[in-house]
View 1 (spheres, chains in turn purple, yellow):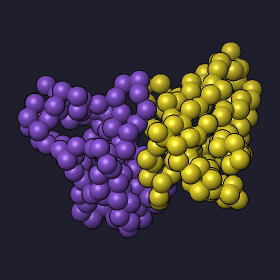
View 2 (tube, chains in turn cyan, brown):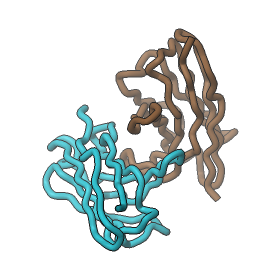
View 3 (tube, chains in turn green, yellow):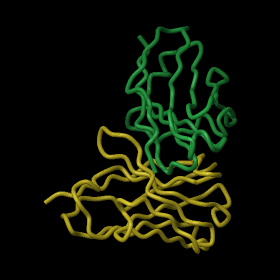
Length: 107
Length: 118
């Protein structure tokens, strides 16, 4: 089982949109619609923000959206806010592993 | 309100053993797959494995297979992680989480720190 690949860091200014990619293989991301995304602020537990590729749990802002094309899933955050600055992790059924994480900096 | 509360983390010497606990409330624990996830200091998340609601199936990542054991006591809404043969690279915050469906984790505990050092 291989790890999922994410960019180490992304950045954006308040109000802008950013996207974080999560690249897997045809045995995980490409095979199943069970990609999830987690937000983790320093010193805190991860929080589920996207599941089943595109769905948001109750209470999660609609500024967060997910998509998938082939073996790559993406998390898009629109209307960036200061509180969005955090680490983001993807996960996919079939891989048994999280992505390496992406640090989002809000400039 | 859903709560997962881990306990048992502490400083332990290499080769030692430790048992972590996770107390669950606010959801039907006995019907839930549960998972353990760890995070070494300053690093990313690592899925350790999961355990079926009735405890009959346990899946482990290769790095802990044979050293770590998952168990649960549904009557007490509790999940356990027995760790033997601890190594320095096992140093991490350990989280329990509900594996809601297909390795998607909707509830997380606050984590408990395990430090393996002499």
